[in-house]
Structure formats: structure tokens, C-alpha cells
Length: 390
Ligand SMILES: [Zn+2]
Image 1: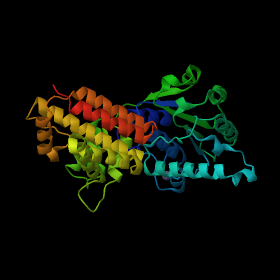
Image 2: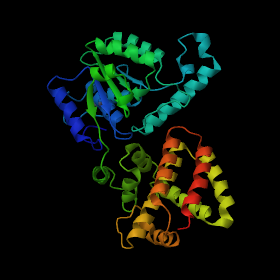
Image 3: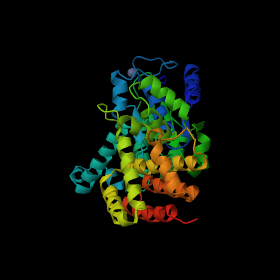
Image 4: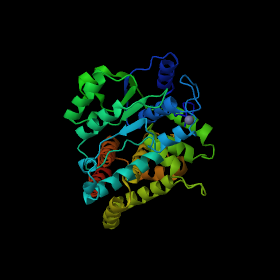
């Protein structure tokens, strides 16, 4: 990508461009804002621009994306760019060769590589290893050593610290020391959606850059300009489904089967609606339990989130049509009849509670709760809420 191809965040990019062209880039930035707002992708874009062979610092276009330096950054292999996120301690055994054959280390390394692979596919993902206790002291010690090395001429050594609020306290203190006397050739970019959980002393050493959720209009415009093959109703579907979360939007965009008009997401939505039918048909409730178990086992966390998000948007549509039978701006315009039937057959549910319950389930899945427990309790509770008598 490049500055121009970024989704939204024009103002934030403008601030960075200005800092670059006037030689006033700070030593440390803190990028804050909601999950999926593109903070990390802008951080990597800045890192690319500072190393790109075909761009100047103040470039309007940004990095070229295709020179060897840009490509190495995309692969997380560039010697000037270090990416730090919460990992398991098993990964951090120092360079003892006996340890390298250690099974725990090998397995942890596989999980780490798999996560980086996902990040390559989806630049809006904030990776964290499931068994991680946070960003660990050893990671910051390694960073201290790396900060001593000079980068290639004319460039900077760039440390991108994802989910900085998860810095272990002693790691945070070590990082603070570096931020207090930053070497001139180093640029820190801390990224956090919960900056209030950072040490105030760290916050005060960084220049804050606040990101906001990308608007639906911005995402729609970007898709129209950059992915013209995505047509209605899929276009509206992606825009409303992702609710300004670029990580979700990216999953939708890239999970499309280009040979058919239907996106994988629409398939998943239809499965979600079939599951809902089972939940609501007393004689089929045992089938609902079975499909809930199968989904918990077979779907990735990302797909489970999409599954639940599909239900959420369907409930929103039903609620709109319940209040106003002529409501036109549906999330799912292609299944307008099914929405009408649902609104008619289930006139009394508390949609606020239903939405809250669904959003909580989504957050629990995103925060690594057990998919089976989340889906089982969601299934039981949603049934009660939907079938409630007035
Ligand atoms: Zn380049």
C-alpha cells in the first residue's frame, strides 16, 4: 500500500507527512484509537517510507511498496524494523542451541510464525499469542540491544510496539529508560487501543496521534476506487458488516471467492441464519446445540466473529422493519422478505438486550475466551430473549 491507498486516516497521515517534510519527526509516537482503525498499518507505512528506495521523506505518495526494502518490511524481515507484540515466554529462551531443540520452544515458534503469517494476510490484525502474559521484559532487553546498532545510512531503526498497554510492568520501566534518552537514530511507535492503561510517564514521552474509526463512507469510497470488482449487494454488505473495523473489512474483502458473486461472508451469514431458525424451532433446538458445538470447533475465531456479527446485523434489520415496515437502508437488502417475516413472527424481543448479548459474545471470542463456552451460553440466552412473551 501507500499513503494514497490507505483507508481513511487522511488527517493522521497528513500530520506525519508534515513532520517528515519539515524534519520534525518525533523520536516516539503513541498511536491510539479503536481496534481496527488502521493504527498499525499507518505505523508500517511510515516505517516503509523511511526505508523505501524510491521515495523521499516528504513524499505525498508514500512508500513504493515494491522495492527490496518495502518487500522486506512486508515480510517482517527488514533489519531496520522491529515488530514487538505479546508473545509466550517459551519463545524467549536465549540463543542456547540446546534450547533450540527444545520442544516447547519449537512449538511456540510455530505458533509465532503462524501469527505473523496471519498478520501478513491482514495488516489490520493486532497479533498476540494466546498464552502470552503480555510484552515481556526479555523482549524489551532485546530491543535495548538492537537500539544500539546503527541502521543503514539515511534511515532509522524503527520499533513498532503493538498493544503497548500489555507491556509487563518491568518491561515498561525498561522501555521508559530508552524513551527518556532516545538514541538519535531510533524511532519508537507505540500502538494502543487502551492508552489509559499505559504508564503516564511513558505516555508523556510520546507524541500522541489519535486515530478514529474509519467511516462507512470512507470504506465505501475506498472499495469503489480500489476494488471495483466488488459490486452490490456485497459492497454494502462489507461496509455495514465491518462497522468501521478495518480488520473485519479486510477479512471480508479477502475471503471473497472471486469466481462467484457470493462472498464467503454471505455463506457464513446464511449459516448463521439457519442456526437461528434451529434455535427458534422448539423441535430443532437439539440441532441448534449440535451446530453451535460444530461451529465452536471448526470455525476460526475470525469466522466465529463474522458469524455473530451476521446475526447482529440481521437483528438490527429486523428491529428497523419492526418499527418501520418501509425502512430501506437494510444491512442485508438481499433478504428483505426474510427480515419482514422475522419482524412479524417475533414482535416482542428486547432488541437492545439481544444486541448487547451478541456484542458481548463477539468481544469474548475476540478476547480468546473458549469458543464452546461462549457459543453454548449465547445459544441458551438468545433463545430466551427471542422467544420472550410480551
Ligand atoms: Zn519502496
